[in-house]
Image 1 (cartoon, rainbow over the protein chains, first blue to last red):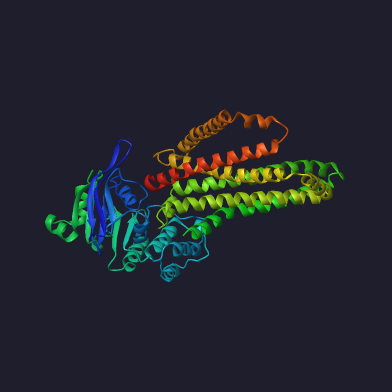
Image 2: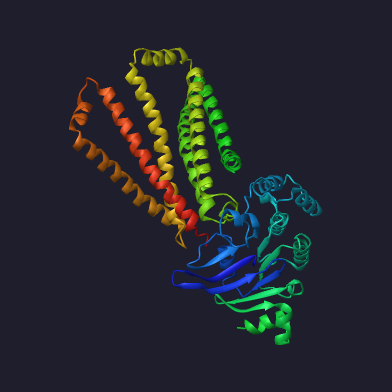
Amino acid sequence: MALLEVSHVSKSYGANRVLDDVTFSIPKGKIVGLLGPNGSGKTTLIKLINDLLKEDSGSIKVEGLDLGVETKKLISYLPDKNYLNNNMTVLELLNYFKDFYEDFRIDKAKELIGKLDLDLNQKLKTMSKGTKEKVQLILVMSRKAKLYILDEPIGGIDPAARDYIINTILTNFSNDASLLISTHLISDLEKVLDEVIFLKNGKVVRSGSTDDIRKETNMSINDLFREEFKC
Amino acid sequence: MLSKLLKYDFKNLYKTLLPIYLITLVITILTVILNNLSDTSNLFSTLNGLMILSYIVILMVLVIGTFFLSIRDFYLDFATERGYLINTLPVKKSTIITSKFITSVTTMLSSIVVMFISIIILVIGNGEWSSFANGVANFFKDIPMDGVIMFILMAVLMIVAYISGLAVCYLSIALGQLKNTNKLGFSFLAYIILYVIYEMYFTFALVFIGTINPDFVRSLDNEIGIISSVNILFGILIGLVIIITTIITPITNYILKNKLNLE
C-alpha cells in the first residue's frame, strides 16, 4: 500500500482551475520533489493533503485512511509561511508540539535549537524571518512522522541557511518515512530526490524516479525543469 | 485533547486580558483617590472628572473587549494563516469549537467578576459601603421565592444568550471563510443575515406561544402573579435559545470539518 495516494484530484477557486485531475502516489521511504513554477498548484495540493482545503473531486488517502484526525498523526507539515503564534517563546512552542503530537521528540528539538544558539525563552516575534523559519523546521523535523510535507522550505533563503535547512531535513527523518518537498530551486535538492512530480498549470506533466527520468531524457532534473517550464 | 486545547486557549486570551484587569484595578484605585481629593482643589476636581470618564471607558473595554478577543481568536484560528497550526493538529473540529466556547464563556465571567470587584472597591473607597450593603440587603430581604427564581433564571438566560451569541458569530466566521477573498467582510455579512433570522425565530416563536396560549400573555400584564409569569417567560426564552444554539453549532462544525478553506 502506498503511503500517500492522490487520486483524480481537482480543485478550483471560482472559475480558476488550480488542480486538474491530479493523480500520483508516494511509497514509503522515498524523498519526492514536487516541482513546478510559482502558481502551478503545489501549495494548493499540499494544503489539500493536510486537510486545510477540500478537493472538488477525487480522493486523498494516507496509509489507506481518509483524511482526518488519524492521518494528521502521521503527517508533519511545514507551510510556506510563518504559522506559529509570534507571542509564544521557543520553549512554549516545544511544549505545544509535545502536548499535541505523541511522536514529537522534545530532546531532539532542544538539541537542534541549542545548535542554533537560540534562547529557549526567546519569543518568536523577536526573531528574524530566517530564524523563525529554522525554528519551524526544527519543530516539524523533530516529529517521528510517517510523512513529512515541506512547502518551499528553501524558498527566499540565503545559500548558507539553505545548506543548514537541507542538512536538518536529511539528518532528521527516519528511513521508513517519506518526504514530499515542494520547490522550484531544484539544483539544491536534485541530488537527494528519489522521485519527482512535475506540476504545470495544475496538471501532473511528468512523474517518476529521478534516475529513470535522467536516463530517459539525458538531462539533469534541473535542466529538464528549465526546459519544461521555460517561458 | 480538550484539556490541552483549553490550556493554550486560556493562556492565549489571558495574555491580553490580565493586563486589562490590572489597568481596570489601577484606574479604580486612582478614581477613588481623586474622588476623595476632588474637594481640595479645582485641579483634582477636573482630574476626577476625567478619571470617572476613564473608569466608564475601561469597564466598557473590559466587557466588549473580552467578547471581541474571543471572536478574534476564533477568526484567526479558522480564517487566517494561524489556522495552519490548529487545523493540522490531530484533534476533532468539535473539540476545538468546544474549547473556544468554554474559554469565551469563562473569560467573560471572569471579566464580569473583575468589574464587580472594581465597583465594590469604588463603593468602599468612597465610604458608601454601609449604605450600599444596606440597600442590597433591603432589596433581597423581602424578596419572595418567585423573585429568587427570577434572578436565577435571568442569570441562566444571560449565560445561554451569550453562548448563543458566540454560536452565531462562530457560524458567521465559518460561512465567511468559505469565500476566497475578503473573508472578514463576508463574515460580517453572514452575521447580519443570521442575526435577522435569529430575531425572526424569536419573534415567530413568541407570537406562536401567544397565539396558542393568550391567557399567558394577559398574565404578563396582570400585577398579581406577574413574577411567576415572567419566570415562565424566562424559561421559554432559555428553551428557545438552547434550541437555536443546538441547531447552529453542528452546522459550524460541519462547515469547518468538511469545507475548511484556508486558501
